[in-house]
Image (cartoon, rainbow, N blue to C red; front, side, top):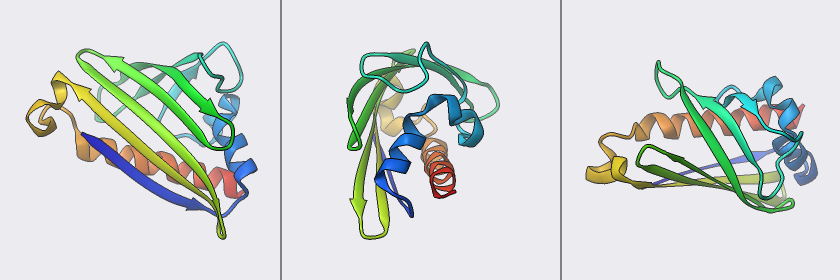
Length: 141
């Protein structure tokens, strides 16, 4: 199962990248992933971060393992939790309006069986859209 969302941000690629990778500032703009904890200040290849996600009422505590970072181009992280694996890829592309960001999250595992009946796909898609809109607002300031 795949969730894909895109957004165009009226800001430079450098500003969007810096906003996204500066974890210390996430508390100021990110309304989706809460309680972000990591040893470093920014996303770094090979590191992990812990955060809390609330698709509904109960919080889900998640560890995100950074799989790949290509500066100003791509960030990939993996989350594994109780029979579910989510691979989330963010692509950053410069364009005539600023920066185009593509979010592509691929879910695999037991919770995706039967068209994802046990996975709140619609809510996850909504949260991805909110995350991108939060990034847009922060990077355009």
